Image (cartoon, rainbow, N blue to C red; front, side, top):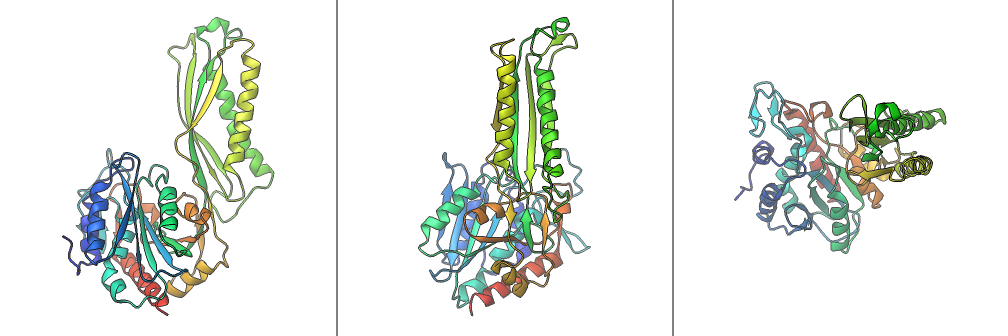
Length: 389
């Protein structure tokens, strides 16, 4: 059973020891967190997936009144296979340079550890507005669990939370915008044959090439139409094909092709519209080529549901809250997607602000600087004070 006087480093050591990758069962770490919170006589709620192999967790600390703040994090991490680690990735290593090494130290178990370390203060604070914990699974493979977690949290409590702080690594900079994302697999079914008959068959490779060029031109057309947001790098929506499989020989027309691609959109662009336009073009190609080969077909499948962008106004109340409790007032945006957009879409004013650098995430020898954890704890302590006024 966890001890009530655990420091943030001690808690982080426990969390790092759970090698829970995105897509895998997270019950080991979520039950540890559940037990840790329960040790402070706080009721927790688990939100299971359909086969009960994974669960998100939420809880409320403080009174059942409107206007509370959600502290959000995820429990899964990315793989370490093939990376050149100098320390055991799932053992917290305290170096002599002020850094703590291990998979998930900055992305984002450091923030979760900061939240849990403040439970002694939270339980004795005279909160006038509640603070919630909301910890999800499968964030690393598409922010899959957050929507159901958010719905469950909103339906479970009679009151309405107002703010959400998502503790993704931002070097404690308040982040008010991130891009939306979705990943897709497109399958092309053509007709096989001798390469000399290319004009009477339908090559899945040739048609895939047309589709890929359409995607590239779609991206360029958005830029040309002035769809630019200088807050982001790059300042436009991106559409990228990262993988393609097809063909058996140079002299055989390929009857099957498959390519994987993603779209990352700035807030003013619509993922839905991009996909609708792409599918319209696919339908046009099908109609034309089915006269040559009736079974010609293009199928596009989502790898995961779209993650909406975050677009919090720089004068939103949540920004003013962060300016009051956080020493870093330099608001910014990030190109990666996160669960913040999902909280915002649910009507909760949302912002990203957490310890550690995204430059350390997903790579070998991931670390977090101890001073970053100290800054995060300081911010959360001020949040407790603010919600006690």
